[in-house]
Amino acid sequence: MSHHRSESLWERALQVIPGGVNSPVRAMGSVGLTPPFMRSGRGCRIEDVDGNRYIDYVGSWGPLIMGHAHPEIVEAVAKAAQKGTSFGAPTEAEVLLAEDLVKKVPSLEKVRLVSSGTEATMSALRLARGYTKRDLIIKFDGCYHGHSDALLVSAGSGLATLGLPSCPGVPQAMAGCTLSLPYNDLEAVERTFQAKPEQIAAVILEPVAGNMGVVEPADGYLKGLRGLCDQYGAVLIFDEVITGFRVALGGAQERFGVTPDLTTLGKIIGGGLPMGAYGGKAEIMDRVAPAGDVYQAGTLSGNPLATAAGLKALELLSVPGVYEQLYDASARLYQGLGKLFNERGLPHYGQWCGALFTFFFQEGPVRDWTSAAKSDTELFARWYRAMLGRGIYLAPSQFEATFVSLAHTDEDIDHTLAAASEALKEL
Ligand SMILES: *Cc1c(COP(=O)(O)O)cnc(C)c1O
Image (cartoon, rainbow, N blue to C red; front, side, top):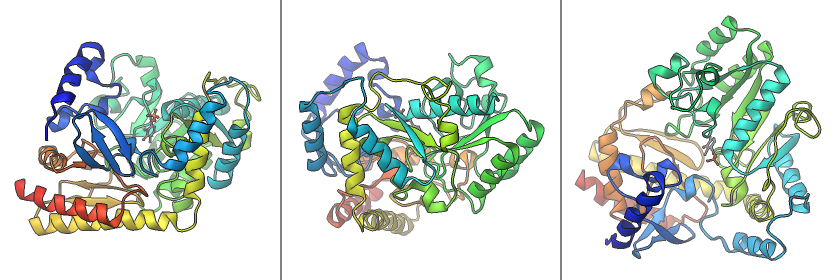
């Protein structure tokens, strides 16, 4: 594979863009590479600027559950563009999308569209605080909720437990309002509620963690959080930006049968265009301006191109049998890789939930950030490079998910497994 053009673009990017990328996870530093620059995609295949082709298991980090450039989504966007790309006034498509989301996601009675997952979680927190008249929030180590100040207090760092900012630029006063606890540890949440019974506005979590690698909620964990939030009058927020429309049509809340007060969405609901949403109980959502007093706004919110793409994606996902097909494809890859790792005697611990999985390079079990962090990231980096060199484009970090889409055929997956078999000989 030649990477001449990518390397030249990389040099230029470094001159004018911090770290060469517009979002840090794209940089590939942790696997010892500079990233290939992409120029086109179709279905599950992408091509870089040097003409190298890859089978893509990143899918833009989740949104592309229908694959790249799905003809019906492209057509919907093109049609919308011809009628005007933004009005800053209400449009029919916003109503249609909100109705569709309310119909499909169990906790949603009302929903507000925004332009990213970060905006959705940030706004949901403000709303929860306004609604409860409390300041503190509980989040969990290793869960990512976008880059707003309150939510960057995070993973696995000693600073986090002290409530110190783990990111320069986040004021101490802000970080002090965020309590970060270990995932899957219900007792830690209970103790915190007991210590501060009337101060906690919200508990926010990924109902299936996807940003420390995939970690499933332990039996009874989500239900237990529901109970504690009810008992102490806190708002339970499921951040379903990854899991929404991926682990089930109605998200993790449908799959696990636990209904949060508020839900945040993003990624898939924009069909590959910038989109997020937050919604939930009407009683809470009616506090959002202009119905209520909690302000939140957006010049491009409910944008016609994004709503057109989102509506079409959700329509395509509503076809009966689609999720069975998705899970079959994902299971074929997951099981196939597990078998190859076994044959090779490679320590690994897999977690799979619908069209989302991670193999941690360690014996396991992995149930929180502390255990996830024990993985062999050096081995992962070698695995990553061996796969990329064979045209398999995975997320360049041990702590990310593998995103299977409806565009991955059995043939694509068997091709991937053959590449993996070869790659493993190199490790
Ligand atoms: C990606 C992600 C976000 C942030 O969404 P952006 O659109 O990148 O701002 C929030 N929460 C979760 C769970 C995510 O995976």
